[in-house]
Image 1 (spheres, rainbow, N blue to C red):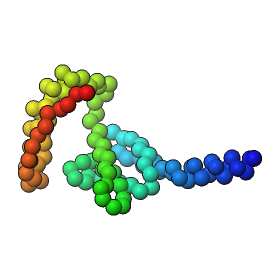
Image 2: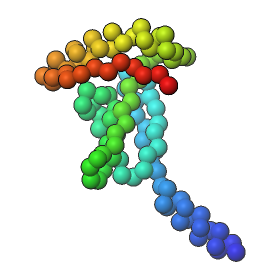
Image 3: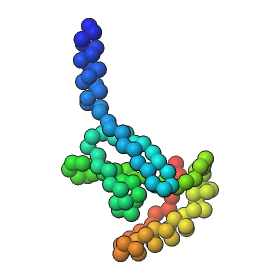
Image 4: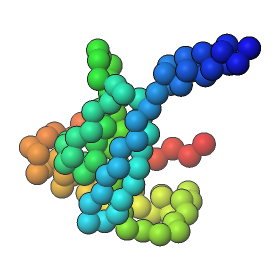
Length: 110
């Protein structure tokens, strides 16, 4: 019985194996646990920390930006008031990279 439990545990752990990646910059530090099939790219696509899944398309991605903000709370009112600033920032980002913005969609709350 002990051998079966050990074998089951090993199979479960190996099937769900995730590596932890520590990363930091001048604004903060963090740790993320992802499966083996992820690449870490620093300063990729305009993002300070970018994780991209390996393999065939469609690929998944995770990007992390440390803001330095502490104890923030997201609210509909706060986010709605932020949309203009966000749009302005994205236009600046696109211009710097010679990209063309096709459309902006307003935030959706649900």
